[in-house]
Image 1 (spheres, rainbow, N blue to C red):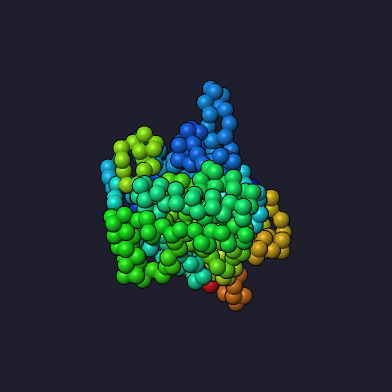
Image 2 (cartoon, rainbow, N blue to C red):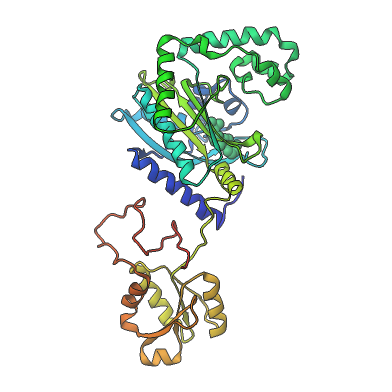
Length: 439
Ligand code: AMP
């Protein structure tokens, strides 16, 4: 687990913000499920997976109930659906933190963030295309070029279990060649062996039966429509007949995104698929579902590797330098912030020189200087920190208007207008989410 500080925290927030805008643009509303769920929610969806059996942080609560810090978000979202029964189709996005007791290494952490979407109540393969394209376009919007999409179909419940039996028979026939770990996995869940990473296991897996011959006509037609849809909307993809995903609940379409600029062992930046039986498993009515989760931490590593989506410098518009008594600094910061100008100051006074140093370090475009002269004349000196020759003095009473003019900041909305945290910032305005670099 790690602490995230500037500039990484701003970059992370900007990434989530970008995802939120992409999801909202496609008609997805936000859902915020709790970080803790009843342990049963996860047990019911992944009894044979490492994520649930080995890596979960679960404990007995004060009232004796067994709960878990979520290792993923889909189960909680579907539990929320079952509990509240919103109108269908239910299209939601989320961003949040998960916990898995993993062997930590670069790109694999015990606490990590995901963004994702889920849609409940739609069987149409064109939705699969919409969902996959949303993720693919999001990666593109960050500037990532080296992200590969693999797709597969695991078939419906019947196809999947017939396929699983066939894989079991095949792997049993070559059991002696499998590692001990793969042999244990084979006992519990043969399909998970297809995901094995050891080269010796991979050699066995390479000759395993393919799902395509086990797909029912309906599953095959669904998958065909997904593939042709991805072609039609221009989302590059490769067929990956051995792609199974970590959790048990996937049916039919499954997909994964790999950032090829990262080390192969930790290069999955996201994945998802259909989970048509999940709502039922959690006590709800049979409901189609599909979604994906993308790993924020790894996406940022991929951005580092491709040198895109840089961390924006935290910057402000102005820094107040008050060498008199701090009263002007106190009042000016409040007035300017209320007017939408990003402004900071130093506390505890200090000489002109040292305060100007702080102003320089703050990244502000303007120093707003109040010395003895300015105080006596009820004026403020505006000194550009980017252009030494640009300096002017304005009456204290017209400072807000002068700054708005200089920065091209729109007047703030009337107080009764509800703030939309996802609306793009007004031209020229600075917010902590979208720090503006001085120009
Ligand atoms: P999953 O929920 O296992 O399908 O994971 C979806 C995405 O979350 C993966 O593709 C990774 O990008 C990310 N992820 C999963 N586990 C971790 C972890 N322990 N640390 C960092 N990212 C993770």
